[in-house]
Length: 159
Image 1 (cartoon, rainbow, N blue to C red):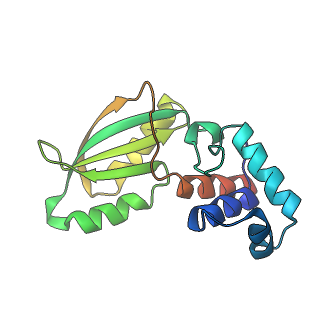
Image 2 (tube, rainbow, N blue to C red):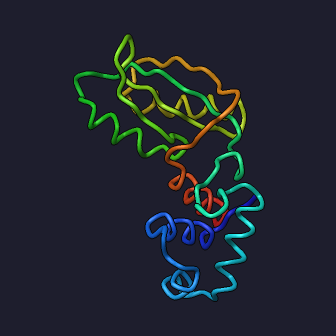
């Protein structure tokens, strides 16, 4: 499903104000109440958001491939600088500092296996990651940070 900037604004509004009404959203976003409701219904029907709680699903808007990557980072930069650099990659939806042989565990999405390689190349290109090791997810049981990816997809569709 193609999402646009209004879809992203609606999801952002309900993410920031989950108990708000559709009428309140229409007032704040300056669009008709019926438009907000129909957009929410359409996104829920097509799997972009879960019913009742707008939670973007990357597979629903073009990113079906999920992988977990263990990353070894440049320790001299510190975790804050590394996380800041990684946060600029919208396909990166979770980052966790972990114990063990790697420093970070990240969850990334791609449009295909080859697109996943592009995302992994972007991780390395930050110069904050020294090494990565990846496994592809076969089934997802819950989701993390997806709103920035939805907003990026909406901007991409607008351009």
